[in-house]
Length: 89
Image 1 (cartoon, one colour):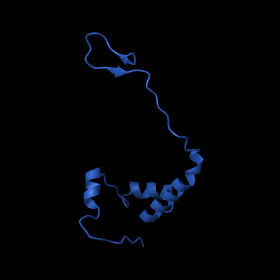
Image 2: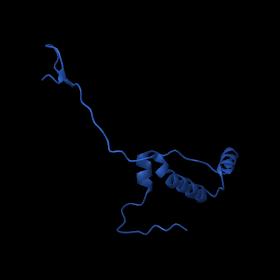
Image 3: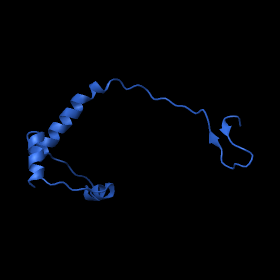
């Protein structure tokens, strides 16, 4: 009971002195090439060559973006099928 901060009138006890730790995953520099590749693939999917072209196309309306909730994204995905094959070409 010494771990809990409480008074005689309190019904709820709050743990004190609780700590945790996580395993070190290493430097973020290891993951930057993966991030760069992902961004390059996204640009390719949109049909743009660089950030400046993406901004230009966004401002003049050639590319438009849509906000979708996680439930809308889930509903818009493939579901209710026995099997499917995703082809990216």
